[in-house]
Amino acid sequence: YETLLRMGVVAPPGTTGTTGADDTFPAEDGSYVPPLWDFHKFQGYAVRPAGGGPAYDAVYALGPPRDAAGYAARARLACHVQYKALAEGHARKMFAPRAAGGKTAVVVWKTQSPWPALRGFLYDWFLASA
Image (cartoon, rainbow, N blue to C red):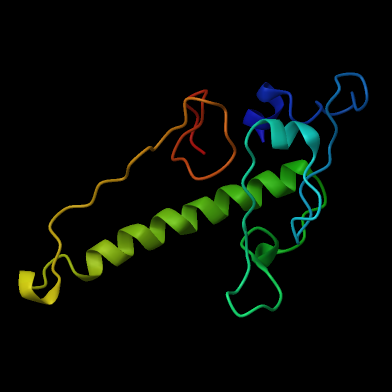
């Protein structure tokens, strides 16, 4: 949430309407993304099944947020789960024989964005954990 404040994506508490930012956040189905979030290359957390059907949103799966701070907290947790799954997937085959698909290393590429983006990084543009 602090990164969103620093980037000017959300307004500081008690100043709504004075900074050009607001306290809105993306809709669950991706039908609405606030303009400043879109400017910062927002990528939604919703995944649509190939065969159709309702989208799955990793942020809203943790409960509907009431404000941008709640959305940011859920998004941070969703990113944590993403990286945890990556590490667990690697660890599952770490000691397997090479013929069985064993892996001895994992590289996490682009752990940080040069532009203040809002998703998928271990730390943000301000070097704070994401």
